[in-house]
Length: 467
Ligand SMILES: CC(C)[C@H](C(=O)O)[C@@H](O)C(=O)O
Ligand code: SF4
Image (tube, rainbow, N blue to C red; front, side, top):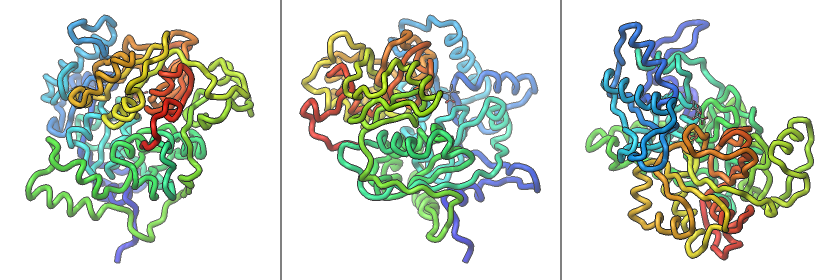
């Protein structure tokens, strides 16, 4: 018998194409996702060197960061955005890469469309010039973000040199309470491990609370791995994973499906395998969280209050956020509510938020916006009538893109504007210069839009039973 191995180790070993003493391993890449922000220089370098893209068939591009979320007919006003979008169009055409063009049905946030089209599969090595590539790990893939020069390397060779990361297990034991969503589980994890807790590690999420999550919930968890410093996040594939993938456009079919299943079933971490680091969290202790500061680890329970600062960093964060220690979170009023991003803008997120909003109105004076993670999510939501619920409640119903998650398009906060956001980062200026971001789940975002201050669905009489 060979030594028991972890999921990450199994995928790694299968993808090493070259190993040499003292050098990083050279890994084969099964899927390379590309977006308009981190790819222009990479393509330019290929062009200058007279090289081709090695596997255009394993390379898929979309426009997400810069795209306006208003009607395509209105055009792109921002010059930098227009230039980057145009460059991607030209590059994809020249190098023979499939592009999901702005406004097309396949377009959306890169980490939403991969799983949606069945491109993301267990056992793969997946890379993209984007830190939240960790999202794809929810399928039991080894997925990590790379820099622009690495994008060039992958385009040219379909391989990537990587130093072997350490392994870490985060086990969330027991059942999470009914009002605790995947987002809350992750904010709870980050609160415990901190923004540096996962540095240098591939994190495998395990335990009952993780297994109980839908694939979309698992994506929310893996998505935010990077906020804890982790290189990649993963969840072992199981029956939920397979049935999510089955029948999607790029899923294997017929005999290939059977063979794929056979391989995928060998992937979960062997009994007795060890991790370099282990963290255990009791799911029953988790609650809905709201971030109070300027890192995703600075969170408190929705029922809690703004904490006393423990150091200079906290003081600075409180100043930036315009908050006083001791203020109950539920008394903090917001100006804006953003439901969107690769963390929380998939169909289940929209369903959950709509269920909270049904029959309610957004409080007067509050700007509320839903930006579906992809155009397919948007269409699905419209087929289910969710758009009507959002619009009747007073939300703007937009086209897909990263939007206010990072404000590279016109959807930004003004200085001092306070936002309840379902995204993943609350850094200073993240959603616009001087903007104040509070990270929350989609259901808390929805309830907050109605109350005008941080609130839970139960305050609107909505039964709790989410995730
Ligand atoms: C623009 C891109 C490089 C960036 C990332 O890598 O994460 C963005 O997606 C983000 O979320 O900050
Ligand atoms: S939605 Fe936000 S976190 Fe996700 S890729 Fe876009 S900018 Fe990055």
